[in-house]
Length: 173
Image 1 (cartoon, rainbow, N blue to C red):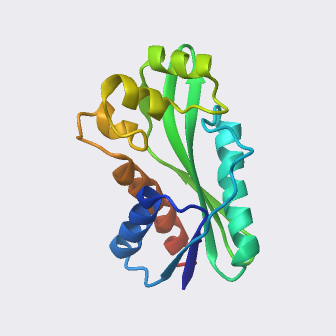
Image 2: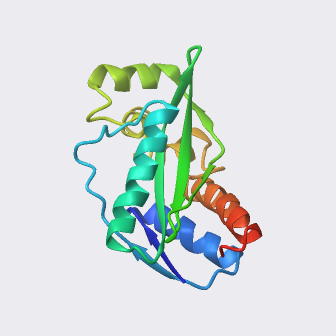
Image 3: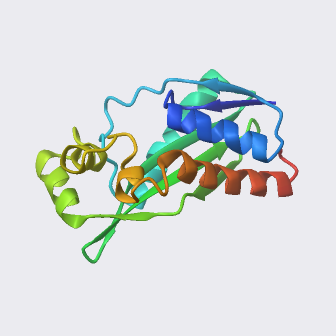
């Protein structure tokens, strides 16, 4: 089986590889660079996160139509002065069917979200601001915010594992 992921992120690749191993999915993993220059660096709102995840999967499927294509996108869910970082995992099968899961979310400090918004979500992520102010990895704000108890790869693995469990139950893996 071929699984193509619309990203070259090492976090996403390792999480996908670990989920395949845990679910005993024998596959070839293909990384595909999706052009995201026109997208906001920091997606905001479930609609935008879902759209970007689906766009990643769709663009990957255009290049690899016979593969199970994944689009993974993280962003901010905001309501009542609370901001949760959450990731959507979109899977597009070769037959054109869609399946989805999400990762567990974690609250981002509001002052850092406000600072990111001031700089502009088009060019700046909350992860970058967290790294600047709390001295962490801009690609892994979850590790910084949990004092290394959790990290981005683990959260991504969790979301992908849930997706694969559903696909397996439906006979698609």
